[in-house]
Length: 319
Ligand SMILES: [Zn+2]
Ligand SMILES: [Zn+2]
Ligand SMILES: [Zn+2]
Image (cartoon, rainbow, N blue to C red; front, side, top):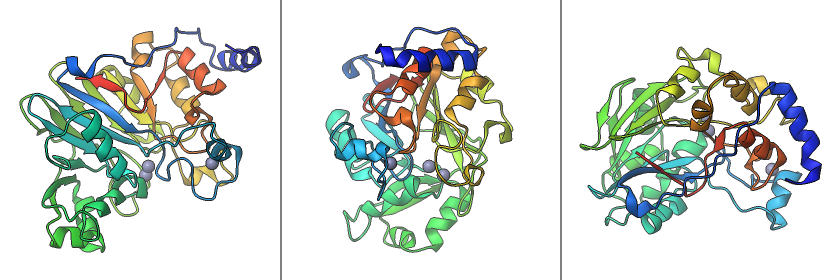
């Protein structure tokens, strides 16, 4: 720890009135040793990192070569036994993410066995364009969507062309309805409150034979959800959850117009929970302005010292 970090950490620990927890190391299990797992294919908010036309320190760090590019929030789901792979959200970085999944995890001769969409905001579905006529011209890629999301794609170009040309095959999902992918894996979408201009928004529960995960990349404040995030996290092994902003005042726009749970609010909500519960949290979907998106950051370190984790690009989470 550098000396100049200490005042920040003391302040943060005072604010949360919380004991420090040992830092959780990223998962290091060998991919060879496990057959069903989630891998993180991206961690940034919809517009990615660096963000277009950003002249602030956050993105300057990338152009100065100090920080690597961050791909947009996306999870891969892999079953090595059945040789199948899926992705959660079709991001503008999908070309790279599909390649990472193929090269680092599973080349089964298919682009993807299925795409699960959360909602119709740019970082979560526009990657579908790469499956279309001007791109690879895919054939009947299964795309799982909720009813409004499905209609939105069917009725609006250019997405409707993916449907009419049968590049994608839309599969209608139902709130809280379990989908059995194979004998090892189950996926359940559930509605969450969010800015639903074009579609509803869902999170997912992903269940393997031994472990399970939550994926909620976008949600308005936790207290607007019918369920308790604390109780839901206790029911799973990993929780990949919305960490768009670190704190209020982070961007020069009214932040009430773009509600998300701030990292410090989520940390506060879990302050009295066990070390095991806190360690399940894997913060994801970080805005370019979020200081915790940097590879090294005092504030990121301090949150990790409190026992929480950040989803790590390429890390593997066994199921
Ligand atoms: Zn988003
Ligand atoms: Zn920036
Ligand atoms: Zn969104």
